[in-house]
Image 1 (cartoon, rainbow, N blue to C red):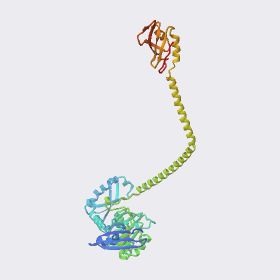
Image 2 (cartoon, rainbow, N blue to C red; image 1 turned 90 degrees about the horizontal axis):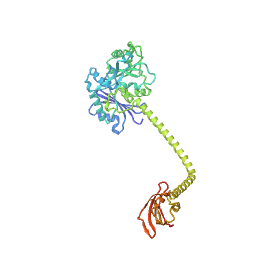
Image 3 (cartoon, rainbow, N blue to C red; image 1 turned 180 degrees about the vertical axis):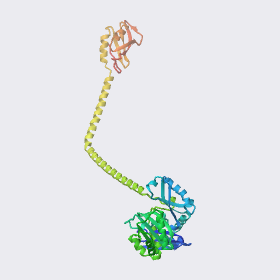
Image 4 (cartoon, rainbow, N blue to C red; image 1 turned 135 degrees about the vertical axis):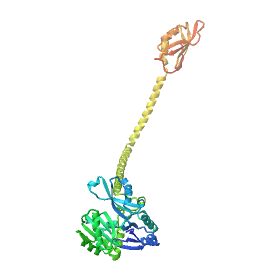
Length: 458
């Protein structure tokens, strides 16, 4: 074992420490309560050497109140507050200073609709705080504080599990009586053990508390258990009276103990081997370690499984995508020469398109003077001649001489190229001719788009 398992039994006036050193090796130490208890407990636990044992602590049943309480049926969130209120009439000490815990107890189907029965264990808060302080002074810490006899079922073999069993465990001058149903705790009592006959009567009273007419097995253990088995057999019990069916390893460890130490030793061993999450835990709720419940553990396991499956699925998808990407890149590399050739053709085609557009724009914007000159030659009278002809985007400017300049305006207006013909300068006479300067705009539908200049004479 990597770390020893240790059980600490806190009794009135003494502390019993059981240390499991292996599968069937037990070391038992009994420490008297005095001023040096914390130091001797640290030595017994091994914390002074720096080791951290897996420690569980428990109180003797004599120091704890265990009762069955019935409450109105309510939600689990309000149950603890109702129990705190109900405890006032069941405890011999102030309920507001008590530390308690509870578990559901079985009841009839008819009563379940309106009532809730719970088994509750309570201890004075001062006693719980003293236990915590003692462990802290010894350099140890326990995640739980249970009732020692409630851990006894942890020592049983898992099979067979009887339907109803009563376990009587005797140690020192008292005895713990446990009533078990299929291994689960239903009630516990602590009674004086002055005589075997009195213990047999207390056994009968314990059955009556749960309305059990009888039981399937009676187990007797602890100090002077042989005489106690004889006394129980002599009573009116039809069940088989025997030693508890302990695990073989537990039997071997008990054989290592002296008979007078087996009572407290078995309790301390049960505390050491008890469940990590006891059913009745007297440790204050705010200092208990956070542990996952069965449902939470299952949910966490399913979540981890889902995350693992999701991660595997993502990894598979990533692998498939990478493989597909490699195939695509390989095909792209194969097509790369053809793509570059197409790109070159596209670039050349784009250049040709730009050149064609330029040529078309130049062609559309170019001046075509020949049709205009031909038209003017046909329109102008024979007695008129032109010194200059200028063409631009706005129109045509003509300068020349004629016998009469005024008739030129209507003649030029009939041209399919010109409109708005007017003189731009006064007409002057030079010898027998009138010198003129005319300006005409282009027809909207037929005018050439851009300008140029041409000069000629007739």
